[in-house]
Image (cartoon, rainbow, N blue to C red; front, top):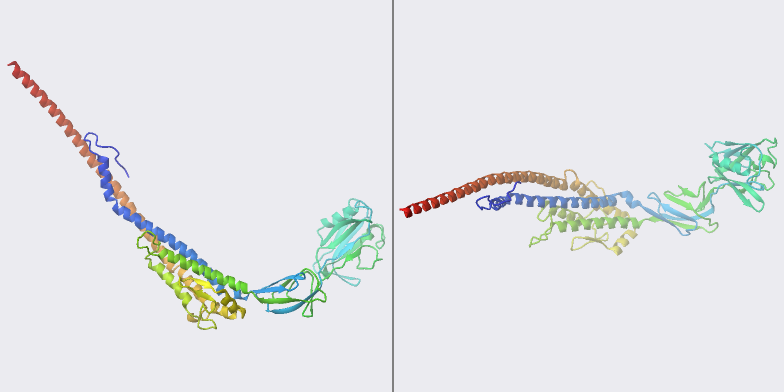
Length: 486
């Protein structure tokens, strides 16, 4: 907005100050618009906070209204050294006797000792297969393709054969172990279980594939006798074996799933002839966590609405939504939802479920009563929160909350309608402010011209008056001189 910064050029009139005072007197409508804009922006920001908090309450309501969330189970094993256990929602509550007689393990084959890793082992081919030994008969595992490794003058040392096997990308890991007798090639299956045993077939360039010289010393045909030529079995391929209430369960790995619906064992050790107890129970901690989350979100929403709608007679500490009918309606809706009964189940009020409503309008979990309620099973508490009867009056309290908050937070809900209205008000206010600003700018220009012209006119008249006065003084002096001469 243009301004005048100097006094009248010749008149001494404070043109700038006069114009400023006149413009200030005309600014009241603009100032009122600015105050209204500040109030509307404060309300819009407040509704943004309310929306965020109600969305948290909706999430908590949705969690507690979801039936499967009440089906969480926990599992514990009396002898934790035997296995760690976990349970899913599909697990059946109960107790089981558990005895682990064998852990799953991979097969390990060891060659006869040679002086060191540079010792030459002969040339030819080594074929590695993975499968199951039934006596002297080998049954390759489905999808397991034997891998043949060529051993020639470039890799026929013990270390070279080890490296060639590892580079082939087979289900066999090769290593060299050195003991007091020398260096030994060790082949270990990378998987556990009886179906991951190894077969090592050799074509020895020395023409004798069954002796203990050349590559033949690295063959393995399932013979586990100590005197057998070739590789010696140091550890057999073995399935894990568990007895569940006396029923045998075998697993190729030490992670056992499916033996009991929803329960997974991760085996750590054996307890042959000393069964331990597995207990599968309702996970009451999960239910308490959901209820605590719901109560916390509800209390935060109630507190926020109370702070935003509070009235201060002095007018200095009133909430941003003080006097806002929509905000008061939201607070009333929340209070109504927690005080309504659920008549269709054993539990009909929050108090019966161990959740008390205080005089301040906030909820609090009565730990003793809640624990007593859930100790008898989660079915009644679950129904109280999750019942989905077609009759709204018979629905669970969390289902009601979820439905009500979906409506409040929806595109046609209270929050959206109120924020849209406030946004439109702010935009209209901005247009009105722009018009007022333009009006004041035009007025200032007009006043500047008017008072500038007045200043010029006064200056001109002052100059004329001074000139006239000087002329009259000169005339009087001439007249006086003329009379003296006479």
